[in-house]
Image 1: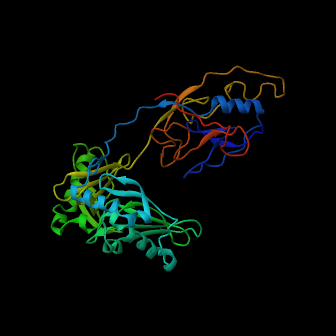
Image 2: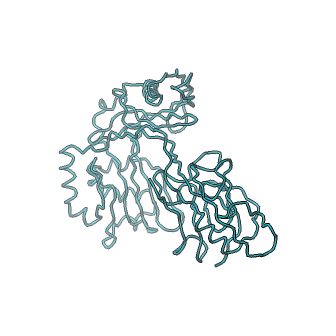
Image 3: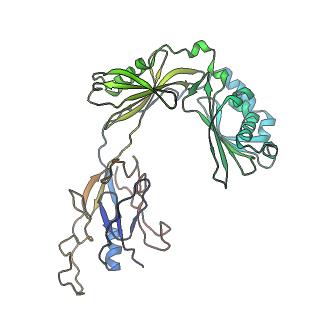
Length: 411
């Protein structure tokens, strides 16, 4: 067994030496000086016995529950009947096969193309956007769309690395107002032949007449409704418009606290919120404070909350480690603790100190400026947003069969 030398950070105990590897995602730890040599047996024991072993979740702070008014709804009977006819259309079935439907809207959320028959768009069209629109037009009846809906969809992005598949992403605006969240992505091969379609966008038929999309509430009223929820009944601050920014947002300065929170300038924009059988005029509002943040969609008809989602996700885990229980939580040299470091004699003499008990350390993240959690809520292994910690026991380098990731041992 070879021994990796170097300094690696592990979830819950600052820096450590040995063969546990942390592949950082997003934040790289600062370089550390190389450690002293450690015997391979001691190194292996430290990794296998003293690795990052989350022993359970630390209590999480109370959070506002997420809200989505579209959840659990089903489309109107007329829409279901129309789409049922589309699903049984043999011409559509020859082109593609739906793998999953979104029951809220009665439309496919993922479709595989029937490659054996071809879709004929790529051979004549050399433009990825136009090819994508042509493919979507052929499948439009499945989505309750027509050719005009597809032509009017807004190009959001073309993902093309020069090799592999090409993805064209389209969103929908109705009379200049963006439909919140909804997006359709068309995956093609290098020859612009259709491979798959994911997501969906609504058409003008779902939008209904313009009178149904009238904005009765202005941005300050929608923001006040969001702030009332954010402060959980606390005081609501005053608002001052400060202008507009990219993406169609209106920006408002906040005078005073929202409950206990000092809130950053708030931005809001008009959107259409997709319910099962209509598009509701609404305001998308972001409320951000130093220790809390949430996104809202507020109905512009009556001020009701249609959507709420926390913009901060964190979770503390308890790690059973051989490390200092306080301060930087620096790791011990091994499960024998620090009493025999450095070596008392300085010479090989078969010293075999007894192990010391490990300690349980609750920790969300290490000393990084963003306080971004290492592991996501509900993680069951030491692999997450900003850490992948494991014991690299066998070749090759990197996590592979025979290596060890720690797993949770309690709820």
